[in-house]
Length: 636
Ligand code: NDP
Image 1 (cartoon, rainbow, N blue to C red):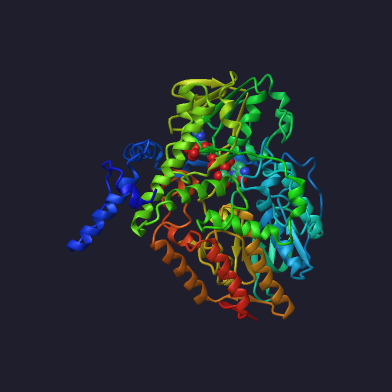
Image 2: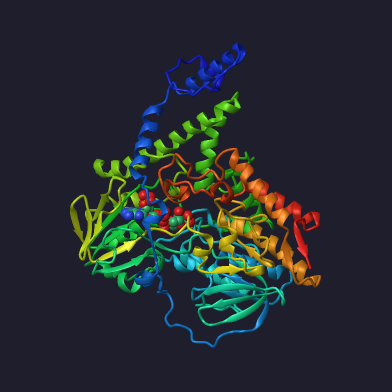
């Protein structure tokens, strides 16, 4: 039914904001538009005003003065949470002091793709420095039971065609993703010269020699012509600032350092040592949604401490059809990634090649408002809000469908707009609450009150447990150099932390004036897409293009011009001035890491992603390369 058709089908009052109008005609047009919108709401099975009010209340309940400061950094007494449980033995080696063409910091998807694209561009002398015991990054650390990619694997796993590999399932589990990371390392000879179990502690630019000096916790002092910082966006786990955090006498660990010695089993489950253990897990984000079913299956008793429920949508995993895999034509992965990116950006495509949770979710929401054929520009936000209400009603109905106890089901229902928090997809999480050995401890948005020697306290009730698992996520809103774990000293001793103190300053999000020969893989002032490896690949191709050109043409110094950086900063701020960019966690959302815990950062307008969307951003980079003038760069 179009808006025009629905206009005649009756109306129900619905408040619509109307701006000041100066003339009769304007008022007339506005009143027609208002009626059109009102007519769409005529047959709604819910009351939008009531939902809006409920969302507001839930948000208010969770707002806290300390915002990001509520979390505890894993240092000092808490540093042991960071220990790597996946290496059997620390590698002993002498410090390295040699010189190489390129050092890549980080051996996750970013570093691997940077390495692969540099190899494609003919760069031979590369060293990857990685704090873990192997490649994999996120997928090295996050081996908790049930860890699985949420974007379909055929789009998400990098370089599939290059490795002639098709994942086994639509959504790969961590083990397969980790093996694939290792396979990329082997295929592109990136193990050669790689330094594992090594953390960078500082970067200094030696201007006289045009070299970076990279220092590490192994006393290395490596010199490099170029450095690529592929630190990863979510790699510094954080703890909740709960009263008595240090008091607990039982066992504890963070989900990104899963202690299989304690739980038994492995990433596929079978946590057989938990049969006589009472276990608490704090947090119900994307990680907990995946591991809770496995804990519920084996723990003597599992207590799930929830502050805010997640949206839990359909997973629908399935094995890869071998006939389909055989039928794939060269170029298939790029085509699929671009199809995904277009669909989640709201750009209509002839076909949804991907059909995963994201394209389905976003596609349906766009369809919801596109079905009205005479939508006015100013109607769009209201119609999008309605589509969002529809989707969230579906998510809430799904809780009732799977959770038998109605009180528990009510507590598991999220009341905020879709995309205020990271959507999740899982078919086993909700039914886990039907088990007699699983208890949901909802904290009504307030979090756990206190940790004692024996357990956790909520609302005056102490829950005694043997083990507390922190599924409390990773640092996001803190300074980039704090998250990286080191600062960068550029030309004339200038620090990157100072240069970015009042907001990111870059050209294309990939490097800054005063920091020659340095490339950064980051979303701030760069592109943003739900398929993060796609963004990493575009960045990797771009930086490899510049580095290979500099090496081939004998240039020793590549610097971003001050004016180019200033202009890019203005471009980013210009988009921000037109409204929120990036589409996630708007200011009216319930707090979380998408909106800096509900306290907008003063630097947000400057440090957000490129507001024109990832499709335009990737095109802009491609055209920049094709132009051949390296606009905004100074080569010496
Ligand atoms: P999140 O930051 O998403 O979740 C942290 C959880 O801890 C939230 O539920 C939070 O509640 C809760 N919490 C924090 N403090 C307290 C407290 N004091 N008391 C009780 N609860 C508390 O971390 P995750 O590790 O779950 O996920 C991080 C990100 O990693 C995801 O958003 C996603 O981007 C990525 N990820 C991707 C996966 C994939 O691709 N398959 C899988 C898993 C993670 P509240 O919501 O109220 O803040």
